[in-house]
Length: 204
Image (cartoon, rainbow, N blue to C red; front, top):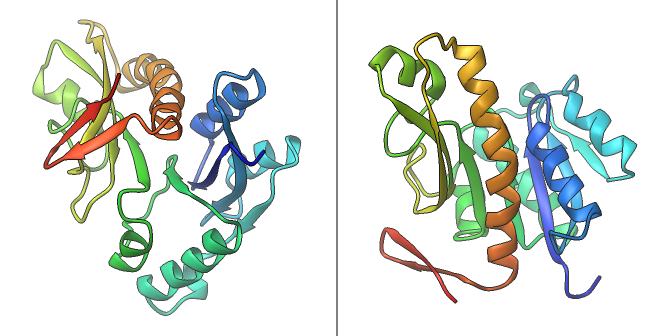
């Protein structure tokens, strides 16, 4: 698998985007290999997903580290030991520190359940509903020093229906997340993403 992009995936919960990435790797549409899954939640269902597919995993409890920087220092060590080339945040409920950011700058992706720059931070779906927008969606972006402020790679829009709840809108957005996250990773693997200032250009 020398030509396959080496991924490290960070999770905190259900891991449905992790599963989508696994499925795309297994069906051959994503040329990558998951070297390690790291969770800061020992009860995350994503760990079960990793076990089912024979993927190595590590659990870091937040409380085991005195500082966020200490947590991220250990994170970087594990990622580097596994030869990780691209770090994937898949429902990782922690703000990362400059320790991780500097070690993998330009090589950390996140997915957010809103059309950034609208509704960053927590509960993007709820924010969209409360604001009354007619369209919402999801965004894959590179991670920078801000919260959901990094250069945008791919977005997908979904209509917001009059009878939507936070749960129904979230479910519709999640289906799109599962499509665009593996696509963004494959573009990176193909060397087709070029960051120019705030913009990401997808090369032909």
